[in-house]
Image 1: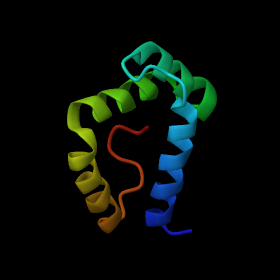
Image 2 (image 1 turned 45 degrees about the vertical axis):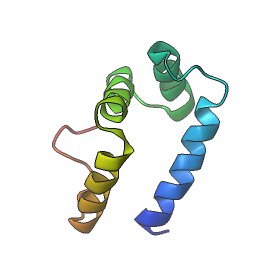
Image 3 (image 1 turned 135 degrees about the horizontal axis):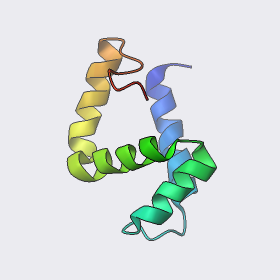
Length: 78
């Protein structure tokens, strides 16, 4: 499966994972990422910070650039 297709399925996966949660409740969102998607606590917190700080406009461009440059795991090592 191509990376671009994976993004669409991941979006659906996270929508289902967060279904019914208060999007402003960071603790619940982190817990759902940890328990339902097997992220570490540090990575879950970082992911939510990225989403809140940058939003989809900036992150979509960063994703496209990382795919074009074939960067799978970044420097932070998550």
